Image (tube, rainbow, N blue to C red; front, top):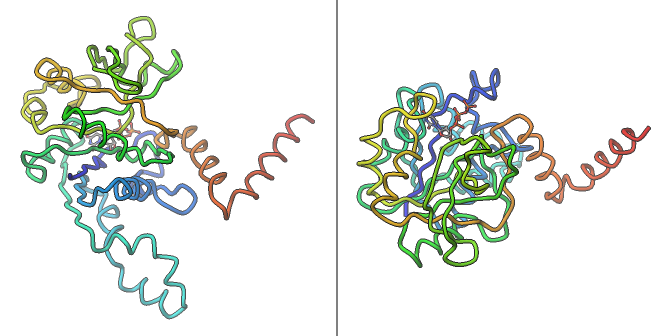
Length: 287
Ligand code: UTP
């Protein structure tokens, strides 16, 4: 199965950094967000990547390709291990498709059709960094294999956060899996059918493409995937899946700070320092 990374967004919430640096290159400590997302895909058995990029985001295309000068420099200084993580991607299959104008997430997905053809495919938004024992895409692939229906990742959010997400409701088929009957983009807390929020991981079937093409511009004058999924739900079952793991919203400034701290607490080389730092700060706070 191929996996699409729609990474053509403008990244307004991270300006001014994203004026020149694609949001997906922003590092969580020393590893860019996009690398976390690609590593999660690889750990889930997905090795064929389709990037929807934008003019000005060429750094993303270069990131997974060899850099002969840097390789040579590191070889001379016996530091080639520093690039080992990235080098493992040099031989994998990347396809880059340009979205000339930021016409929306749904529009970006529609552009992937020539690379996808008539197969089911995965979608991953690198803003959502997910830490879990079993990689989240592997969990979702197991659900897809069982039901052969599109699968969307979900998590429960507090009422106040409901207006930031796609929200869905429907009957549970088994623990963690529900059949989506209602799906609304960014509802008010009063009108939301539940607190089940869409997270940036999907497995879609190719019958979504004609629906995306039909789509008029939705919320915020962009072509949204949600609107096409609502139409798809009238034709076939679409599933929601409550993944096992913890998701961090690295696409907002506060979420980014939270992501950094959690990853720092997970890594052997940063855990002790971060714990001491947090303890020290908590102590200062009391004074
Ligand atoms: P977001 O809504 O997070 O937009 O897009 P953004 O541009 O990345 O960030 P802000 O809101 O301006 O700060 C969700 C996903 O869809 C992609 C984004 O790159 C992100 O992965 N996207 C969005 C596109 O590929 N093309 C678009 O036209 C819009």
